[in-house]
Image (cartoon, rainbow, N blue to C red):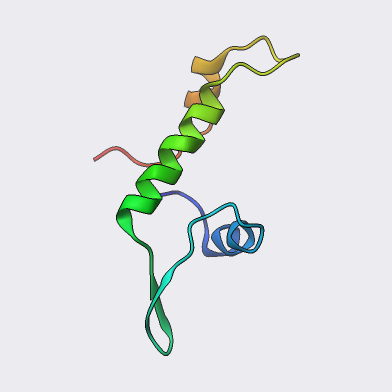
Length: 71
């Protein structure tokens, strides 16, 4: 659902910037789809917001930093 590596997801989780997983078993975790979709939506709004000093070209930023693959 995202293009993030497991390492990046782990780092974001440690910083509190990624949804927490649920434990399915001793060595198995999963993420709630609704929480990941909400997280993706929030990230896309942040990426689309104009940034001071960068010209505010949010459409270019959105193309440059894809968050998920289209089906």
